[in-house]
Image 1: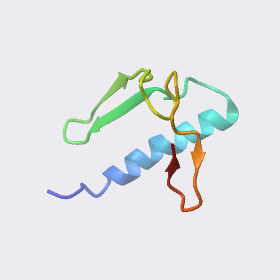
Image 2 (image 1 turned 135 degrees about the horizontal axis):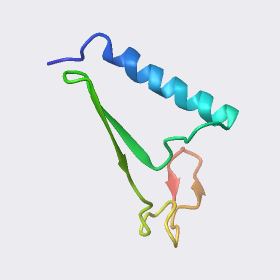
Image 3 (image 1 turned 90 degrees about the vertical axis):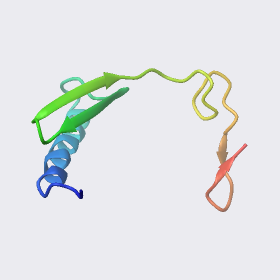
Image 4 (image 1 turned 45 degrees about the horizontal axis):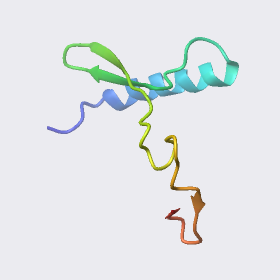
Length: 75
């Protein structure tokens, strides 16, 4: 199937717009949301996601607290 040639450019444009919004502090950033784009129908969908309370990195009781020398997660 591959990737349609213009799709990386379209997604890159969305990503660049998000960076500008965050840097300038304008608009509503896509933090906590997934952006799904269908280039065949030219439609997009935004799905809101919440934090996972059981996440070992950012949950209520984090188990991963740093990095070890080799760059892997320390528990």
